[in-house]
Image (cartoon, rainbow, N blue to C red; front, side, top):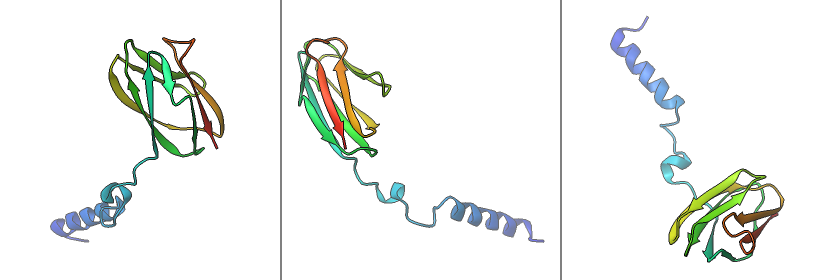
Length: 119
């Protein structure tokens, strides 16, 4: 049986190795940045109106609402929703299945449509 100080040291070493602290991991070395696209909305109109992105991978959309009113970036089927005030900026990170996905601005249904094609 190990003495108390040695038992504690052995426990700490096992914990340290078990949690991966003894090896480099992406979290420690800085994970690669996500592929990112910027989407600008001017008075309920998306720019660009169509994007092609990789399917099944985490990606980031930077949303810039240039106003004058709020923006509700949404795709109900994928459960994605982000509301931005006028002249605000935010982002969403998604992992889209292959196919076409229509995102809308719920506050500007007539003009606010963005088609994202994941392939």
